[in-house]
Amino acid sequence: MCFVIALLNLVGLILDGRCLMSFVNLVSGGLDSTLVGVMAKESQIDHFPLFIDYGQRAAVKEWATCQIVHRQLGLPEPTRMDLSGFGRLITSGLTCESLDIKDDAFTPGRNLMFLLMGSSYAYQVGANSVAIGLLAEQFSLFPDQRFPFIGQAEQAISEAMGRSIKVLTPLIDFGKADVVQLATEKGISGTYSCHTGETQPCGCCIACLEFKFN
Image 1: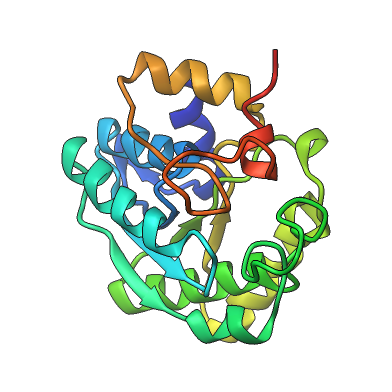
Image 2: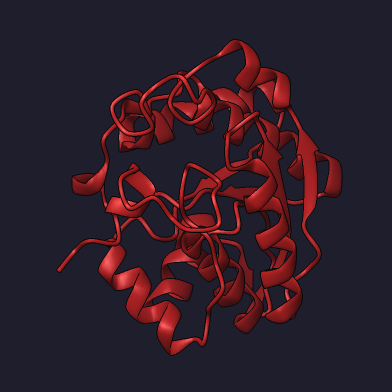
């Protein structure tokens, strides 16, 4: 319930008890974005899952998992956007096997690109928001995971689109332990969170280390 209230408050589009919000959900087959989708479904909020292949090492595994999990949970079929050329040119530990998966994880412009492409898709399908699964700021490592970036990105995107496109961060008050607990309560399983794309998670990348919260 707290999640739903936070989501609706961010957009402020409630009229006569009806939710007038719809959003593009940036999905990866991981736990965070899947939880956002499940909560939206339970709240009867229209949402459009968008998977962006930006040339990440885990793209094949993430996309396959994303499709399977959405089907199992009765979520809308995700749409895949191919921007794989981004990762061929903008190299990092997430896109290039010769770089360290953890120490070189920062991928310049990745989250800005996510929000811009998600907002463009929102414009196309008539949605008024885009949701990204960022967690509480104390867990953020990079500048494009923090409040100043979110606010400025939203302003720039709205200017570029010629109309308001809200950037939603529905998990921004959550730590990974909170996400795991809520996802367990919702019966979510089978998601994938590892930057290597291997069947067996590496346990060393940032995505894997987030789960070591005990």
